[in-house]
Image (cartoon, rainbow, N blue to C red; front, side, top):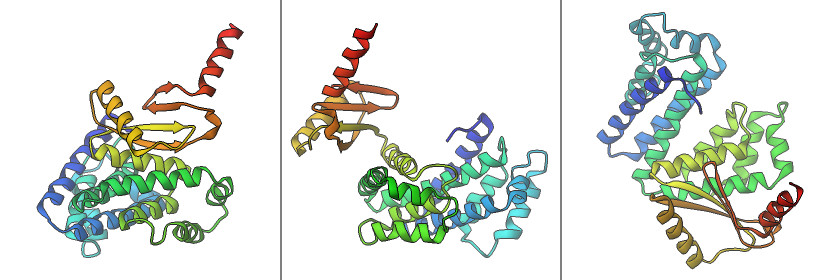
Length: 275
């Protein structure tokens, strides 16, 4: 998600309000409801072009935008959701699209904070990452989910059949919403983004590791410690087995790639010979 300066400030203010409300409640159920209601509003904003345009209209009075918001949602969502939406509506956004991006981000944050409070953030991150690998590894599944003619409810039901009883409530809600409102993003990419958001929530960087063979728990711990020392910050490992590497590891952290695989070394050798 890329936001212009005004939208970044608007999102920061709304997120601060959300986190203040989260700190004031000890109920993870209330946070779950907040996230789910924000996702419901997101769906409405995606459908209603006029509404998102009116709420993002910087030329109108903030009080007028808040009044519009209250008229639509007061009594239909919780007070906490209404307060977060008021922070959204009274801020200045660079465009209606970025306002929608902001509401989506806030909904995700609410659910990740809920998982954090319940001690489930680690498992949510792992579930999202593993599901992303499953989807990325199934061309047929990706085609079905990307089909613009396919019924949304059918796509949601298909993914639910894969994860039912296997993931937490937070993961299921995040995945359902990603399928329901992909907003031009492939499901595998969206799941990877969500897994990264969960990792960042824990203030850790994510190392995407491809290994020719499965790593033992001891090897994972040793690699984690090594990367943490190199980058001077906590590192979370997402490990994928890829036999095509031939041997060794390929590690990607942000834009940096550390390629110690046989396939990577052969590719580098071919490039050197061609020059």
